[in-house]
Image (cartoon, rainbow, N blue to C red; front, side, top):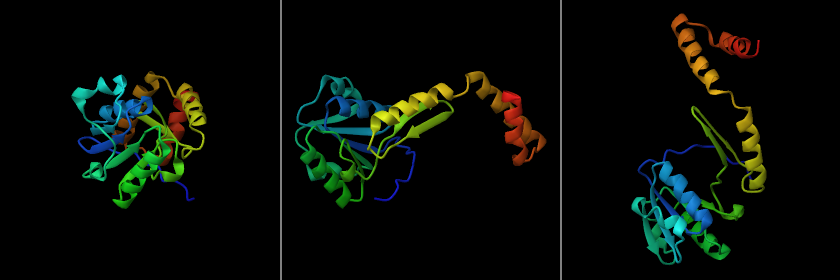
Length: 182
């Protein structure tokens, strides 16, 4: 299998289908809402963790149907049934829609990473679905290594100075290192 291509998506106002509404589906729904996606959930059984988002999602309490893929930009197959996840993945593949098939990397065309958000930083680590727990551990290690907020504010101020003073790009990084570590 070839290497995955890392990518961050803007999902604001774009339809995303989540098939499955258990604990994994609920986590994905919450993340997608935060990203501004128009979330559609299809599941035979909808957990309370998904129902709390009813005001922000469309819920169809039934089995997946091919037509559920109409107009979607991304699909997440998050059922606890591998055959159902493969069915969703196959339908998405036929329509050229990226699909994350939870716990089934061979059926997926998209993988989620362990995500660290500390504005302005957004870091994602992926093992292409092979060892997600290790990806999470690495995210936590990186989180502890990120600079304190005062460094971020100071780096922004330095950048403004450098732009104003036309400091060459090659000189900026060494100056930043000297400022914080020198």
